Image 1 (spheres, helix red, strand yellow):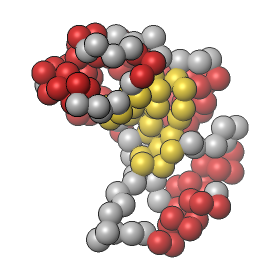
Image 2 (image 1 turned 30 degrees about the horizontal axis):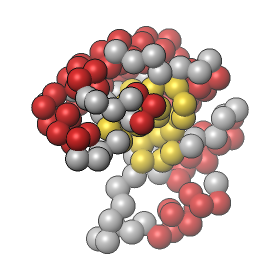
Image 3 (image 1 turned 90 degrees about the vertical axis):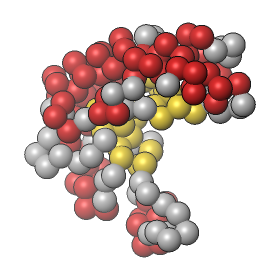
Length: 150
């Protein structure tokens, strides 16, 4: 993993998408330390997994991810999936991390329109990213239209 990431960065990759559930944060952190590119040129994303959602659990999970990555800050921190009954408290934790400067951007992954509508009712900071599957065979036109106006 470390060599793969080092090679990718050497070939020009600057965005690294990881997650607690992928169990690769430690390897990503080691690779980042070994590349000849400054930290501010890299964009590192990680995600809180379903079993760590909730306010305090998310804060703890973030700190664990940050330590594994061995970074002072994370560029983008996402909620990996919308866990019913937990994603709004999880979002409050992400807002706290954002306001305190531990993350540069916050967002969600795999959220659908009804999840976002629910979240937008109470959030102080709107999600900056909704990482969703999107390709020529799955264009999600109606959802894309919603996201452009949210």
